[in-house]
Length: 417
Ligand SMILES: CC(=O)N[C@H]1[C@@H](OP(=O)(O)OP(=O)(O)OC[C@H]2O[C@@H](n3ccc(=O)[nH]c3=O)[C@H](O)[C@@H]2O)O[C@H](CO)[C@@H](O)[C@@H]1O
Ligand SMILES: C=C(OP(=O)(O)O)C(=O)O
Image 1: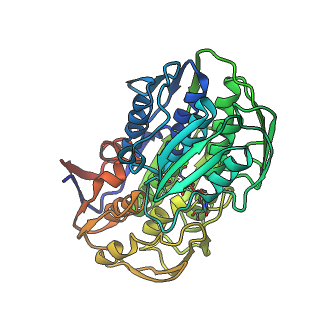
Image 2: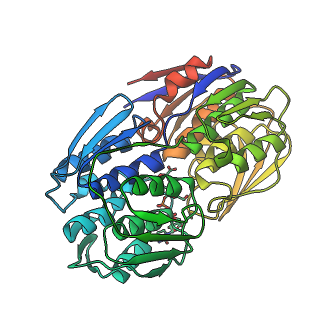
């Protein structure tokens, strides 16, 4: 069992690059099934979720290879339409392969996806969109069997702006006859990145980044390359690390516009921020103070994935910070671990109230999910003494070599495998 050991209290300083976005690369790897040719994905982070996507593509019959930050996918040889449960349960994004497999092969058999346990994560919106496009879907004890002689374009109004349901619908619509119009679509930057990839494939898709996405199915075969956008949640996590440690850090290779709600909060907390075209510089040498209430919302609102690391950065801010988690029912699992470090947090339903304490102390703690794990790293960097974090496999799902990155900024951090 791996452990990350941090001796806290060192101010981080220096510059680090931000890697490609997990939540972009995974749907793009699924979309590579539509290409019926070779895709080269650049800026692909080395994450256990990416490994899981590689295993899914290989199982389906594709040729997949990884070389540094590049992943090659050749989907000409797609033969299978099923994903076994041991692959499905590895991550949430396994469900995004559904729309692409169905569109390519006319059938798909899979089970409920895994991913972070943040409360109920149904896929009803994914399935009802595919049904509206002509798929017949049977759900039987967690197994999902989808068949579609022919998918057709239609209007789909999502009851919630679900990121995954928007992506699954875009993928299925890219290879079907007619025009699909998704209303109340998710507006996250990763949807825009998926649109860019699909356009390179020849699909006439527009509107990503707004609540209305229109797709006219038309894949042109052929090889192509795509560069994944930077990971805004990884960037938010590094900013939180810098803030908690009282340090000064420059992030490179970022899109600051994707992070404005997070940088606004850090600014309110008293951090100095300088935003460049592709850089963010944060300086946290002044005492931090509580920000106004932080409510998670679909993009462009404050991202739920940044709630745990920013909460960790607020634990020693003067005053009271209120968090309202609107996206997931159970996204305060990190709180119990942060309490072990001396934090003062009270939760009730969707609300968490953080009362700033003068200091945190190191403790043995355990990650319960990906961003919860990241929040423990943030807290440990600012705490006095040694923290040992177990459950590191959660962190590996979304952060490419975070230990080396933090070490390069001066953290006293060690991974014991
Ligand atoms: C791989 C990936 O991109 N994961 C991100 C994606 O997850 P994911 O795509 O799973 O998140 P969704 O946007 O779908 O979920 C948002 C809300 O809608 C609900 N819902 C969703 C689908 C559905 O069919 N029915 C339903 O009720 C969910 O339970 C949740 O309460 O967006 C989340 C919200 O920004 C992020 O936290 C995740 O990091
Ligand atoms: C919730 C997350 O991931 P997933 O949807 O893959 O579980 C996340 O990236 O914070």
